[in-house]
Image (cartoon, rainbow, N blue to C red):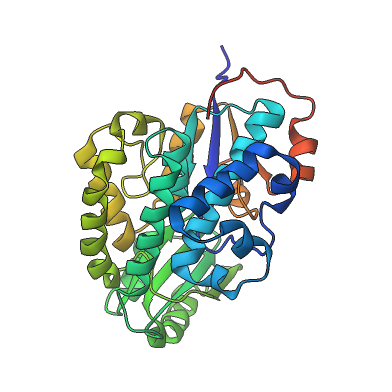
Length: 321
């Protein structure tokens, strides 16, 4: 019998856009309630920050709770309007926390406060201006070879997004040298791009060790809010596979995620084995292209109009989210 389970995936930091979620907010009561719940927990208006051109939307400690809130708000709007009922969950970096909330591992009010603290400790792990990241796009990428090329530089592979794209992260002043080396080492490749990313710190690199230590304490302080057993339906960026359901494993994976590579390619393959359909819910179409590299169709819901196009003729078995 064909696999009927549905998976939903959530993009992370960098997907934020002004006005994200506003169309759902204006038309669906349950979406508005999510923004209100998050705002009550945080002590500031998430809706105002998302909709009204507040520059803090792009500051890490505000970006993270805003994205998480928007993704959960849209997901609950999809359940209300269409009965959209996923049972498998994944998320890229910050998106893993949205996945945990969606799976019932963590309540929204606790999650938004945890990720705001997460953003704060990540930003504070390095001096301002020290770190940077760059996407490396190569058809037929050999990751072992890339590791060797940058081995003696203060740079790490931060995201393994697909068979043709990774992200490197570390000291920003060494990224130009890395680009030069990569282009020389892979000069036989027809398609090769090294694209600097607009980020404020070297996320998912060795330079996040201070953030890991601080974030572990934050997780332990909030341990009473977690239901780790429910995490077995959520993929772990750190391990590449599904969480085990163990609280020790869950906290370890979420802690080490900050300073280690996001194994998104492995996550995609695990999700594809577990579910028959996969949808992306978030402010921007960040993950659909990655799924194409593993021969999986992932449709992206980034607006109410897109949702109407995708779901208007579908019937889902209703399930609380």
